[in-house]
Amino acid sequence: MTLDAAELARLDRAHIIHPYLPGSATERIVMTEGAGCRLTDTEGRSYLDATGGLWLAQVGHGRTDLADVAHEQMKKLEYFTSFWDFSNDRAIELAARLAELAPDPLNHVYYTSGGSEGVEAAIKMARYYHHRRGEGSRTWILARSKAYHGVGYGGSSAAGFPLYQEGFAPMVPHVSHLTPPWPYRSELYDGQDPTDFLIRELEERIAEIGPENIAAMVGEPIMGVGGMLVPPADYWPRVREVLDRHGILLIFDEVVTAYGRVGEWFAAQYFETTPDIIVTAKGITSGYVPLGALLVGDHVAEALLREQGFPMGYTYNGHPVATAVALANLDVIEKEGLLARATTIGSFLHAELQSQLGELDVVGEVRSVGMMLAVELVADKATREPLPLDPERMPHDVIRRESGVIVRDSAHSLVLSPPLIMTEAEAKEAASALRSVLERTE
Ligand code: PLP
Image 1 (tube, rainbow, N blue to C red):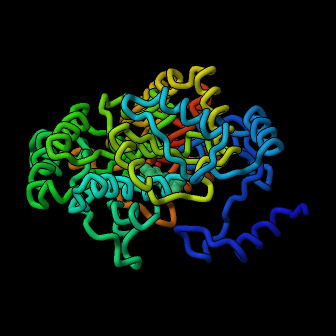
Image 2: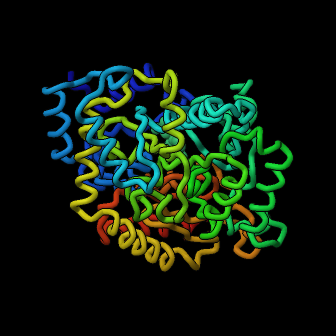
Image 3: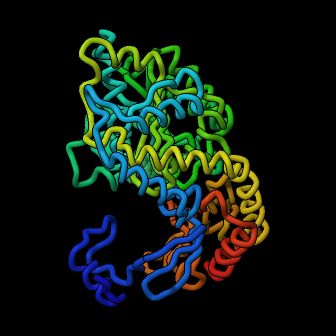
């Protein structure tokens, strides 16, 4: 069945429930092809993908080497569960590879099909770990405002935006939100050093709830949806030290930051902080097939694997096609030196954004780590008041319409997370597209 562009658009409106926009939202772009950092729609228009899909296309679009691996694996064994008393060769190979890449003692892997499933598994794992160890009172989860942890009930409850909670109540109880690390917004910290303020708040919150009641803290090492918020270098090591003192687990939600995006395999390595559980998804396959993997510390796994084991599993735990593609994707990242490339091309793109946009009135700050970048928009550079945005003319929409460059809007920032293979010419093109719109924005 080959449908033309108009018919595809009509059927899309008639049959797909897209998230976040009303059904009346029209003019949805229908993509049909991708190659490298470029995408093509049904009208034959070309786009520069500066968001890497939803922050995951590490190795770029349209790679036949990954497609061939999926094809071969489907012909050999398309699916058999790695649930209960079976396993499969690809899932085992990938788990061993991830254990090698992750910091010690994260030597165990629990598979999911994506990030939301991963966050649910991590929260349940943390509570279950304490339950198994006879500390069943440890049920509270510490999270942060401006956090995003997917759309399961646990993740939505930990999310730091009312959008994910309003209308969905009752949410999962025993979740407490802390202030996010966002050094540009110094007003959040009463004029104190941001890390000192945040550590004091953490200590006070632990004392209020009682450490014996807290299972874990969950956090994105760099907050993505919140606007690419990069914490000060001493934040995570100091959080880790406080949590350790109180027997509270640390869960890193690295659904965006893992697999090269920050120039390391994991942001845990970038921040020199080893959590007890790392949740990953997205970049593990660069989006070629859905997969997620939790990396779990020896001590947590030991408690979970005792007695009757960990009573939670998914039909697609360790899917052979997904794990085969992940292995091939990790090979590409390694062979093409994409960890180092994330740092070099990320610095180049940062420098381009800074030089092309830095002096514009609406640009408060350009910040980045590796290939996670944000341009924070302000109404006034001195007061740092956020730029009021017109939903009918959001800068990222105008940029896409006028230049074909795809960026996203996240909490008053334009955010970019391009494929790690982006060229310097493409980086310049992305920065120029932002400039041509932002220089006319007031
Ligand atoms: N956690 C974080 C930090 C994310 O950014 C996302 C998705 O963007 C998720 C969890 C949810 O992942 P998924 O959409 O694969 O369920």
